[in-house]
Amino acid sequence: MKDTDYYSVRWSTNAALAQTKLPQVVSLVPVLGYAILYGDQFQNLVMQFTSLGSDVLFTPFQRICLLYAGGLCVLAGLIIFYVFCPSIIRQYKTRTEYIRHVMETSDYRQIGDMNRAMVSLLEGQPKEGDELYFNEFPAQAIYNAVRFTLGFRSRYEVFSGAKPQGTVSPGLAAYFEAMNRTRWFASILSNGLMIFGAGLFLLPSVDVFFMVVDRVLLSPFR
Image 1 (cartoon, rainbow, N blue to C red):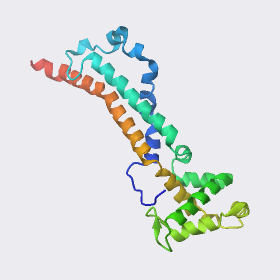
Image 2 (image 1 turned 60 degrees about the horizontal axis):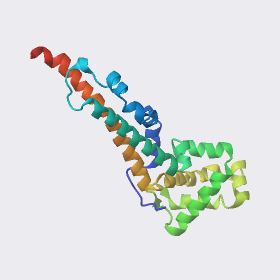
Image 3 (image 1 turned 90 degrees about the vertical axis):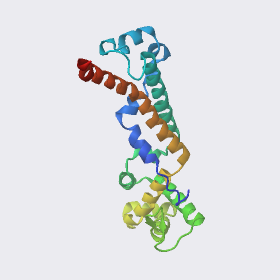
Image 4 (image 1 turned 120 degrees about the vertical axis):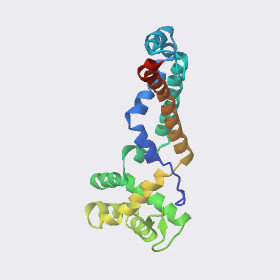
């Protein structure tokens, strides 16, 4: 865990993509099976578009290949996401939602995980006072969150209100951001596969769009 890891693609980006309808629908294409997508009946019924005129960019078979390849890429990206993405990023859309859950449910396990991770951060990359971790969280705030959550009794006092809960929030927020930056290569690979696969899947639609334009707008002038 490095507070200097500022990669443009984080797991929260992948989570936002995975929760949209397009990857969910596209990822079902490989499940339909090789026989359906490459069958003669599927090509004849769905992918010929003979009434629109000649092909512009792709043949019917190429369109089917693009659909299948796009679906495989998206499915691979989703598998990487669900295997490697930290559970708290998959479960909670924002760190605010995560902190609210921990406090409202008195989740001792999450507090313990945060404490261990932040202790490791403080020891491995020591900072002082107003120096920032992740370019956002003052070192003193992280230290206070760790100090207030050392041991079961301290955590009980936080949840019971004997200690101020607001002191723990910066630690939980920093922990969420730290998890958001883990396994950066898998995050980038997952994101890239989903975007690339969606692009491949949508290419046949672009081809059909050009066919419609050619048929409706250009053919009367020939």
